[in-house]
Length: 435
Image (cartoon, one colour):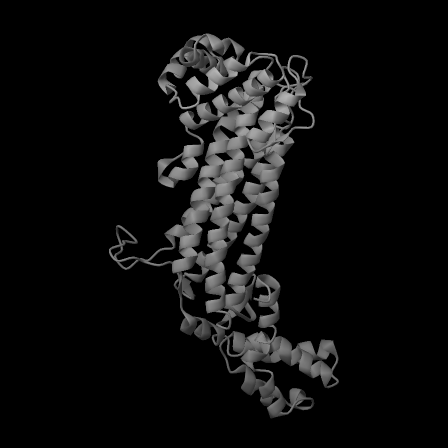
């Protein structure tokens, strides 16, 4: 986790103190279940909670023990015994380290998902607000980076809203996918611990019991989770890239907010660069980079090896922290985005009406010309305009082959900008609902 790209609430999920607190709760809830089953004394379970429930664990002490034991869970249990006293002998009965580690990881991932879902809600709110603000603001649609036909800037933002709505749904499913608990013993057979302990711990920790585990919870669940984060990051980059293109000097249809006192370049005082969007592009690449290790972690040896462990210690905090920061930055970027309708209109007019070429093509076919001939007639008049050698509308009116099919008035009708926006309301209703 890089402090520059870290927000406190998400970072807190991955702090050692938080991890030890979750480890303790898993062990203490298991002790409660074991006490109810008569495996350990009920007084021991009460003592474990009484002495450990409000404890602030000494991270340095745990690390000191781990340097000797070379085992993080044993180090924690040794420190817990120092806090709880003799009743600590009833902690961790019938359990293996992965029961604690995997259940804790899934608690952390579900908490992280809750923050990320809230982040997406903020992005959606900003997109909706700006989409309705510019619902009918005309701008040029581009395919291959080249002017195509008119759209509205509101439609661009509505497209992003729909995309992030899907992202929210996927993330909700990913949260459910990873919200499982395993307290099943050394190889998942419950040989040394009753399955009812797992059920109790799962309920207490807001999880569901893993139907079948080995020594670990199956890693296809985690692969799906991190793959989902990668898809969300790709959506962040898609929107960031759109803004970067729109802010280019030759386009300048939209621009990141530039605050008072902000500097764009150490060398060129005039610069206003899309640094936030570029930053989001880089952060998105990092989140996607964490997906591959998660996919490779699925293939563990037999009931378990630890090849996944080192990777997860890095990708779990880093991917969630980075995406949290990116989504928060994106929401603010959209909310403060500067939009320039006049430049949008200027760019719409830049090709002298060529953006209406398809309407002319269709109009000619409806008047009896073949599609092949219609295409040739329209293109024949479009290419000089492309080279800056005339006005499309005027050239069409002076082309005798075109005039065989269309009058001047009929040609003029095909240049109505509003014609392209007659279904904007329908699209908005599809994306945002009737409200």
